Image (cartoon, rainbow, N blue to C red; front, side):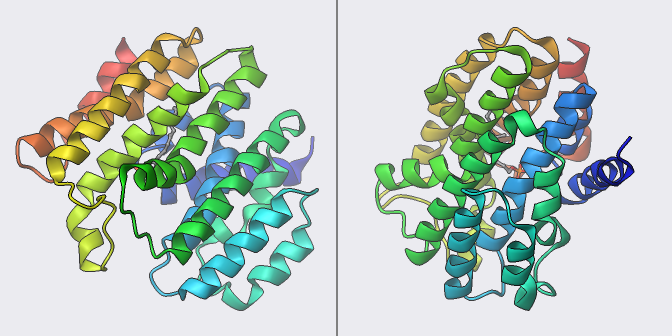
Length: 273
Ligand SMILES: CC(C)=CCC/C(C)=C/CC/C(C)=C/COP(=O)(O)OP(=O)(O)O
């Protein structure tokens, strides 16, 4: 047994628990091989998301880091080069980012190139949107942004399902799933984002337009769910879907987000069915 990689897998679950409110529980419910794979894949994307979202790093540092990481991910991953790249920023960056090389190392070899490739595309898309200062003017811009930051999570997960259990899914539906979840987050975080001077609303859009965008994409997510023939995978995907659906309904009723009991109730309903 390789005890270093066993230790890193445990660490991955600890870091996941500390960084993701939404995905720790669904990932924990996956069977061991899937759990390890999806955890490492999620952490790879989260590692770069923390750079894009960083509250202190200047834009030029973000774009330099994201572009360089994207390039590193397109080759056999050079851990030393990665550590040299982030070294000047290690104190500012969270653990999930500083350990990207370890998350890649625990991803099964048969699927790691898919994870690296989606993450590389995401990193270059994030670099592009940092450069544009997230100036989303049109629906096409919104589709482009949500493709990079969330649609690609769906693409990567679909690649994992295909590898694990030969499950065929529709790429556009997987992307829409990500877009649906992301647009619910945009609605939920609108005030917080505008306080830091960022808006993801296309010109002329109000909240109702973003609600429609979220609903349209979540409808496609529902079609995606119907195509999943593996129960363990289907439960995993249903949890964020149902949480998003419920978040939309509480926001429509004028509240900011679900309370903890409501979150737990959604998870119980999904896992008991
Ligand atoms: C095929 C398929 C299942 C597609 C879905 C793809 C997917 C899981 C996209 C994630 C997008 C997203 C908004 C993540 C952060 O959510 P958050 O802020 O709620 O999560 P956090 O608690 O991890 O920060």
